[in-house]
Image 1 (tube, rainbow, N blue to C red):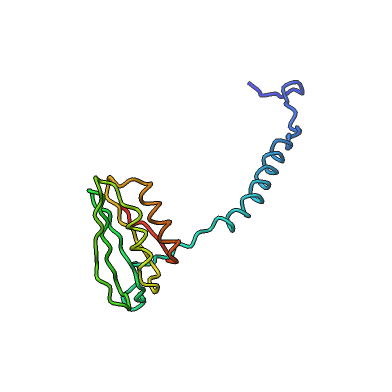
Image 2 (tube, rainbow, N blue to C red):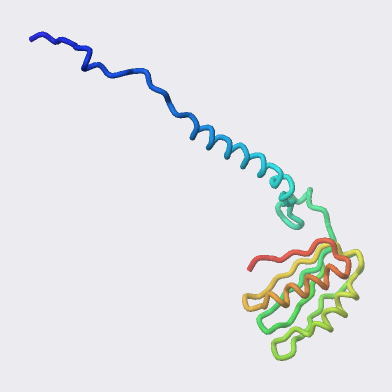
Length: 150
């Protein structure tokens, strides 16, 4: 029982590896990387919080107005850290609709030192009303306008 090898049973060990598909994938990845690097810089958003998230000593007292939408469509304005003493007030709605002209008048009368406005909508508040109030606040010169989650 001897094991003999013949030249016909040997396989060719030298073969060529096709590297062209690997280069194609690599070139596409490099192009994708180069194009997306630009958008990382352009699409960055400042994610610092205006209120909360810091320690008590780091938090600066910024004049803020909190505007709360209730389920009936009324708005409640409350003021925090305002230098000018402003009383909190409410604006009633008419048949569940916000009276935008009254809201505009009250926002124009706000203290000019207010830097932040936070909106707290109710679950049934329409997006149209939220956007209109945000637009009025921006037109009144308030720098930072935000929405509190439900």
